[in-house]
Amino acid sequence: LFGKPHPFAEQIGLCPANAPADWIMRLRGKSEVYGEWKLWDVTVAALHWIMALRPHPDRIVVPKGGGELHQKAQRNNQIANSWQRLLDRIEVDKPAFPRRSFNKLRKTAINLVRQQAGEEVASLFASHGKPVHDELIRVYANPWWVKLHATTDSIRLKLDDIFKSVGEPFRPVEVRG
Image 1: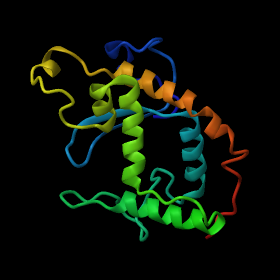
Image 2: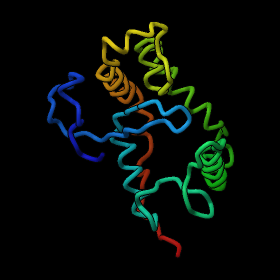
Image 3: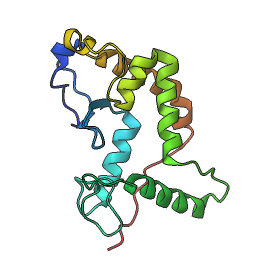
């Protein structure tokens, strides 16, 4: 959801409830656990840049031959494969660019959230099935979505110098047909 208020802002305690923001909300394919993430400004800029280059702008990452990214009940390496292709492309311009697996990127993000907000919020960020050991807690309390969104906003501010170090990250490019 680009530029929309959170659909459940009042229920989860987001203030102001009608503030527009950018969101990803989905069920995790592997476990069907719900997850939501407030997108950073640089992420939104990157998504809009990529969407302008794609013949099907509703899909950001697609398999090399096109089609659906996720096949039910199958191990999915498409994101990792796309990440490797991106690293291959970066290596053309920056041969010394460090290669890290997509999983390392994900673990780094989870660790940043954990260091700032603790294990329950990190588990919520990771979209894990059971962030706490108390089976009844989900019956009586909502997950800490507001704390998760505030934490990722804070991490974005901490990383600001890194993002500012790139002059124009999303230059217009010629689209190949």
